[in-house]
Image (cartoon, rainbow over the protein chains, first blue to last red):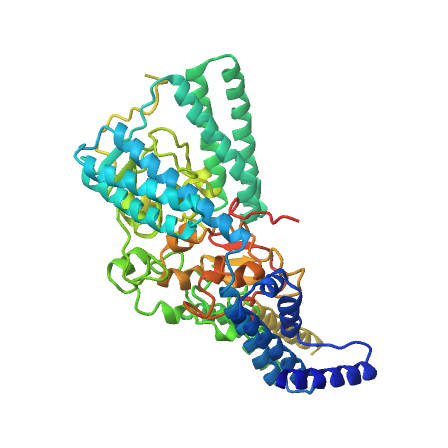
Length: 277
Length: 200
Length: 133
């Protein structure tokens, strides 16, 4: 009854305001609420759902929206704002009752995939790493059982439950690794096995600094003397790099390493000039 | 003949010269007279340059200073030391959005990366990171968990790769005050720096 | 007399110039993210997401692992439709864990026209995704 009354009021006001001006102007919030509650995909899904609760909530929300429009056209903007907020709130409550949308399901599926990959790689690592004690077989077996349980749930499209089990398993796997690691520090020394490896490292390093230079110049925007010196260092670095490229082509590995280092040093000087250490 | 205009002139010129001192908040002989004052940190939303002061929502937002009141301070980033604040229980961020009592599992593993030159070696502490992050956040998309598999340099970090994915955008930035937070393991004195197979 | 007046004028001009030099460039809170994939086209202010406020209450993994937020400003295609259905921000901003979506202006409070960016340290290069279309 209330719904039809407000619709009637709305019709009267709309027609009178149309008579008065060229177009009916409502607040952006009301316009947005209208597009959401009436025209959106979510609304369509709600209309198609066979649930009394959802249909009732949707109707209530639309009723509140109509009342908001009436209030706004009648001049009471504050009331219109409150009513449109209530309409949106009611609509959100109804949306919670909907089954998960396709994009939400996709997120859950990819989370499952991520978790499975993580846990499997931990298990692999446990088998091959040299710094684990190897006493945790029982726990590992439990983990494997849990994983197959989760897989069954996933196959039956019960993604949330599957992910919950896997998250618990992941915690346990991290715990196992903590307990079984015999060392708490791994040192990645900078000893290169072969000169080729070192050349590769130095080349990559030089390339990274080269990429950084234009971005740094753009961000720091040096002027005058600083800019001049910056450009000078960059030019020098590029010159030395050219020499290094020749050496790399001629397979003079040891020389190229030194030359690349020299080029990177010039880049570093250029960066220091514009305030980046 | 000292007319009013002369007096005003003298007053204004001396005001100009003392103004720099006023801006610095001290007397006329400030140490860095021509240095621009540093940008203020932790500004409230209406003044911080990205929030629109004309939006009604801006004034409902909590000013950061208010929230940071009891936390452990730092000199960079948000000017809050987040890890110390968590360890001192000043804040208790949830590990699970719905369950306030769920605790993260912490991994105690340090990875030491030796660096060229005289800078101290880098120590990457898993414990602080696993307190906040999940394994999949970094492995294997950003870091391959294998020795020698991750090429990085300071330039790459500043470009937003590897550590720079977070450190520089949301975690503490790369700045002169933060070098030692990562470069924390000094090399042993007279250590044979086997950096280069060249020139041996 | 004339010279004095000119000097007086100069003094006043200098005063006003120095006054204009006071304001220093304002800095947003470190870690704030401006999201403007779709806002300008919809004539809404862009969204400003404050990391600090959420970091006080949640771990990084809650959003970046459990809820599927990728690292990268603008990399997640967040739309109001997805939020209402409980994805991304809507997982908490649904009236249960945090306030609900009818408070448009609290999120959409950015200066109009600000491009998608991270307000991190000045040298941020590759942390900004180019939004599609």
